[in-house]
Amino acid sequence: MSDLDKKLRIDNYTPDFDPAKEPLLRVRNLKQYFKATKAVDDVSFDIKKGEVFGLVGESGCGKTTTGRSIIGLYDITDGDVYFRGKRIGMGAGAEKRIKQELKAAKAAGNSARVAELEADKVVHKELMTKIQMIFQDPVGSLDPRMTVREIISEGLIIRGIRDKKFIDEKVSNVLEMVGLVPEHAERYPHEFSGGQRQRIGIARAIVLQPDLIIADEPISALDVSIQAQVINLMNDLREQMGLTIMFIAHDLSVVKYFSDRIGVMYFGKMVELADSDELFAHPLHPYTKSLLSAIPLPDPNYEKKRKRITYVPALSHDYSKEGPTFREVVPGHFVYCNSEELKKYQSEVASIDANAKKK
Image (cartoon, rainbow, N blue to C red):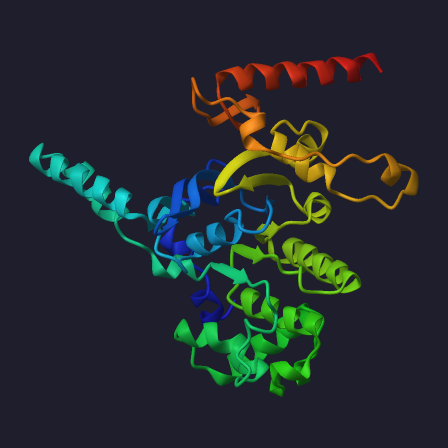
């Protein structure tokens, strides 16, 4: 490995990180408010190294805002984001809490705690380069005045790399990895199709050898045949580079195929979180059932009988006595519910399992 390749690695910044013991990304009580609009409201989840974490929900539910808040495109209203064990984002509320704890630790003469809190305040900018984003619009996300070489190499230059030979080599390599050719480097974005532009966006994301990629509906603007190609490409890159992917989408059938675990969002809240197979086998929250009922299948007999479930929160829940919180119904399966609903969901899962054993 060359010295410049080593420069792209950040292992030295997180020598104590052990992916076997802690998740690659931890999001805790994330809130992103835009004045009176609660785009993301108290969302928590983990993403393990090497997995694909799907985030689904209808348009406007807060999926994209969650991804943009994690990567730092928005200033977080409240909550914490940890990457490789280090805090990379905190809201005003979290910053206030740390200041209060720091003041108390200094007053108590606890030097070890003071040092720990001082270190925790630091946002490691080097770490942020190991999280990259693939945007939904392959046209609007690429600067039309820049060549493909300039677009892909921009991140390398920001990292301080000036060796033209190394940059050209890297650009050629990633172009080949995404199914393009080195000769494409001298062209401009308007000379490519939508699928090719998205491949350029993927090349820009992987050139810095990231650990985590946030893919914000990367296939929604593409034709169906091209969607499959892009999904398969991302799967290949995941295996080849050991990538961890946060895959944001509204198409549950695609998410099921591509994701290890799935989180379902509704109006800024995470309402259900489970392994992909578990979520489809035992959907518990009424909104999740509503989403699943909307998935069409290439079976005319099934489509004739398929009934769409409508989710109306006021009719589905009674929170007059006790409000909902995010609770673990069965190991690894979390639902936004109150105590009464928790018992109902646990009973529902037990009944499904009992019937499965009889068969």
